[in-house]
Image (cartoon, rainbow, N blue to C red; front, side, top):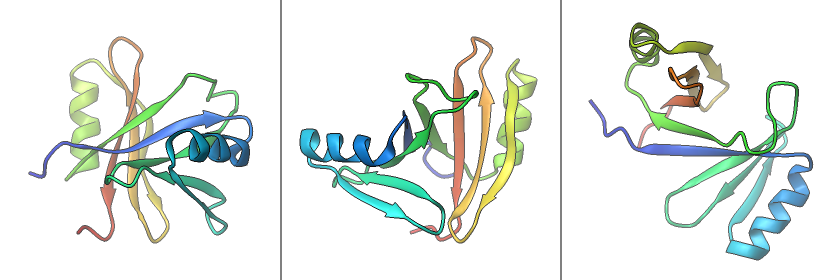
Length: 120
């Protein structure tokens, strides 16, 4: 089993470019936009990073989503459900990147789990 580290954090934003500029100026984070995925990512320079998610009916300001490393997303989702959680997104592929799933814990917090397609 790998370490269960936090591997990605998503911050909701109504304007991803504006959010990227803000955090770049505030914290010095490197901001990159992936045109293929239409996703803006941030890198804090210490190994931590994440992205900006667009607001929607499902994603509101303050709905920061933390992703935890997973060796087996399906097994983790099954266990989360057995422990009283609910599945929000089943295991889903991010092309050329990896897989993710999202569950809500029994208190309603959404947590993501992630497996990298190219570990290391």
